[in-house]
Length: 518
Image (cartoon, rainbow, N blue to C red; front, side):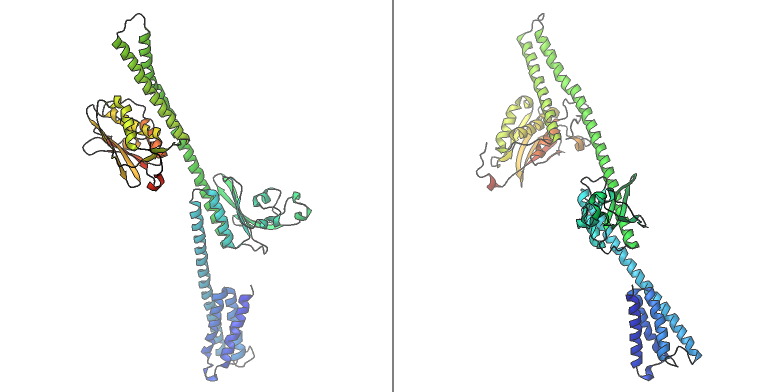
């Protein structure tokens, strides 16, 4: 505090010594302006108060040492009074102007400091995890304010308060938790309010012992407020000196607390929105599942029951052809029912995250041949084109799951493609992946259906014709491909038709040198 005034005295004395050693011819009245250097230096270094003191000291020194009669505060020439008073006014005004510039420069530095800290706080709070962000903010504040420890505790963050600094700073080592310090009987004792924060003198709880009972600590507590009210605190242990924070530090802490409150509110709103979206999707899934059960499952069951009931009629004589037709219907509808149930089970496994491919090394051409042989009854009315290069490298896949992906895509194409039109299955290497495509010359995919084509229970329309199906095949294919680390997409072909492409990742050739190919 006294450094500025000491500097003012020393600066004025130094200027007086310089004037004293000047030759007499140079000691004219204007030489008093040299004192303005001391006044300006004091104002720039220490502010307004020391600058005013320097101005008065310069007035007194100049009058005592250099104005006749010297070593007296009287003035022989009345005109000298005018010069001295003008000098004093000039020195005071100059000092105040310089001090004002210093004050504005200091305010600009403080604003810059606040802006940098608040930018760091906003950047940290922009992450996904709130608890690590609060820990980083606590450390940033501890470093910026040069205090012993900072702790942040908010109601919506599990795991207790986060802190930075020496844990022994809290209550002299009695407790390492500032929140515990403020909850377990610690009470304010004559704390003084300063803006939204409060200095609090705390006493450890009686359970800490009589010796600890006499240990007091002053901490600064800033509330974190959002939503309905106070939801947390920023607690600061300033250290042994116990220095109080100025308006700048209090403003900075208040802004940080406001940022944290806003982040907590955003996090709450985001969780509410996520919960609402989950509930909405769950409701949609339940409704779609109910529709699938009520229609897609009942239809094959009705056909099976009707065919079985017809076969059991003793009063009707069925021809061998009729009996064969009934049996074929039962078999076909049972397979359809089995496929729907299998897709539902696969979708359930994907939703629960327990789908784990059982991978092995397979030749993709052989896998496609197996699928085509099994689906021959489905594709018999279409012209099938298979284009699988013989030099295609083996792939590490779950055979059953990739078989199901191909089956779903080919069966989907067979539903929409008119009889006699082509369905083409191709595969090729594309850098680190193999692309497998199922293309057709059917009606194509309506533009409005493309974004939702792989959604569960969604069925695209084929003009005015209703196409049978549960809307699960493509959703299951997407989940199985993604479980292998690949991707799937749908697009319309030039000249008409649709094309479904899925990718399977390839491993390094060196990694598969000794792998058995099935």
